[in-house]
Length: 352
Image 1 (cartoon, rainbow, N blue to C red):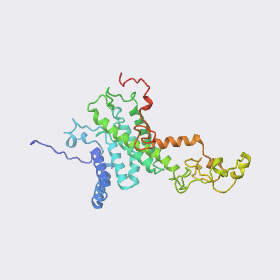
Image 2 (image 1 turned 120 degrees about the vertical axis):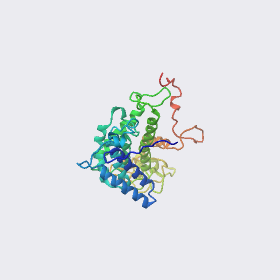
Image 3 (image 1 turned 60 degrees about the horizontal axis):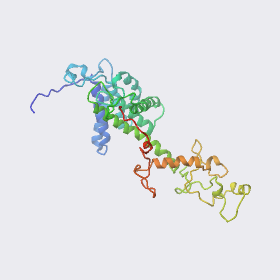
Image 4 (image 1 turned 180 degrees about the vertical axis):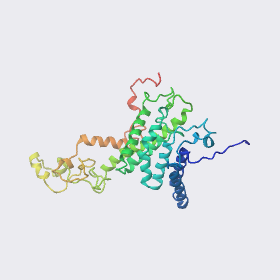
C-alpha cells in the first residue's frame, strides 16, 4: 500500500512513551542476557532514558504523549493516554529486574500510590496499553513472594500484593465483574473490544497462580527434606528422617512378648532408635525457629497422629500431576477431581 505514514517526534514531555521504552529495553536485556554486549547496550539505553524521563525541573516537563500536538496529536483519537505515572514505574520496575539496582525499585514502590491516583474507575483491574499499574503490581508481588527484600521495600511491595490479592478474587466474583451468557468476563463493560481485557486477565491470573503453586509445593517440600535441618519429617522417606518416633508400636521391639503400657515406658526413655520403622508417618515437626529434636520423650517434636497425617495425604494427592481423570483399583490417575463433587447437584446455568 502506498499512503502517507506520518512520524511524530516527541521531546521529554512524552513520559508515558519513555516508560514503555524503558520497560521494553530492560525486558529485552533479560531475554538476550547470553549476548552480553547487546544486553548491556539495552540496559544502558534504558538507564539514560530513565534519568531524563524522571527529572521534573525547569528544564524537563513530565506529561503524556498525546497532550502535545506535535508528539501525539495524530494518535489522540485512537490511543489517548490518560496518565504517565504507571508507565514510569513500569519502566523503573523492569530496570530493577534487569540491573538489580534497588534505586529503581525504590522509585517504583515510592511512586506506586501516585500512579494509583491516576487510575480511573473504569480501568481498575485492567491491564492494557493505557494501564500498566495492574501488571506492575503483579511484578512487584512476584518479587515479594519469591525474593522478598524486606525493609525498606516491604510497605510498597505489600501495597502491590494487597492490590493483586483483591483483584484476583474480584475476577472470580460475578458481582464485581459481570460476564456474558457464554462466560466471557467483562472488565470494561461500557467499552468495546472485550477480548483484549479478558486475555490479559487470564495472563495475570496465571502469574498469580505461580504464587499459589509455590505455597502448595513449598510446604510439602519442607516436610520431605527441603528445610534447615536437611531431614525428612516423613519416617522412612529419604536418607535422614526421625528414628526416635513417639509411637508405642514403633518403639517396642517385636519379640513375641506382650508388654503393658507401664512396662513400655522402658523404651519411651531409651536412646536407641526405634526397632520398627513407621513408614510414611509424618511427625509433629520443628519449632518456630526450624529446630527439631529427634527425642522419643518429646512428643511435640516426634509424635505422629492420624489427624495430622490426613492433611499430608490430601496435599500429596493435590500435587499429583497429571490431574485426576478417572480412578481404578490400581491407584493410577490419581489427583483431585475438579467436578465430581457436583455430580449430584442440579446446577442452574450461569446467566439464567
